[in-house]
Image 1: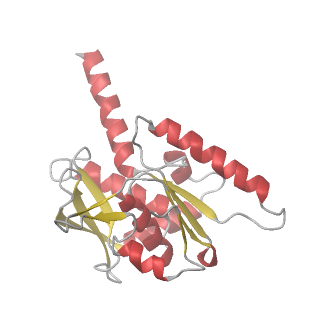
Image 2 (image 1 turned 180 degrees about the horizontal axis):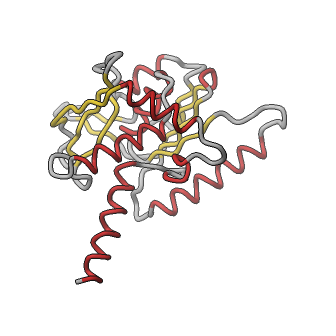
Image 3 (image 1 turned 90 degrees about the vertical axis):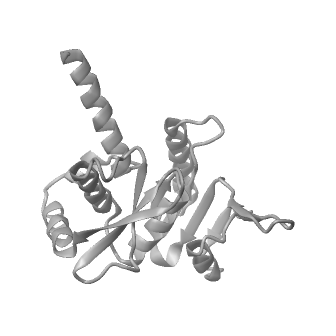
Length: 217
């Protein structure tokens, strides 16, 4: 069982993560395998990236996970030399999100902007893409210079059920528009973090809309 993947020292762990071989148990009798849900740190300082995977399990809430993460980052900041800045640090709660953040850094894409795009895709396709049932994950392998590819994954079965595409020119236009803003970005207001998810934001919006409809009714 791995606690930390130090890619600078052991670069082969990068490929093992992408292949789903990290923290996976295989039965010697039946050869069946399953992933173990446990905290994991991905560290690649050469790319200035650190990702904390901390699953919401064992009775913990997302708020508790976020609080633990904030304390950890605060401790790291105190331990680092004053002239050495911390790398960009992400918090994720599912293994697929960890792999996605690694892919996004390789593609030099903004994770918050990608979550904003996911939010738009969920809202525009509520019947085909119900946020309570489906994950959306960026797929760099099937993306092209013209289109970004996202895979719709059934949360219950883990199966990929559809591929959705988003024009890369639209991504570039959004990135340029948000970069031109003065002061805090609307993206940062939409996803204040440290954990941010377009799917979670959709579920929050739907809950608020349902509560408002009930009050009006």
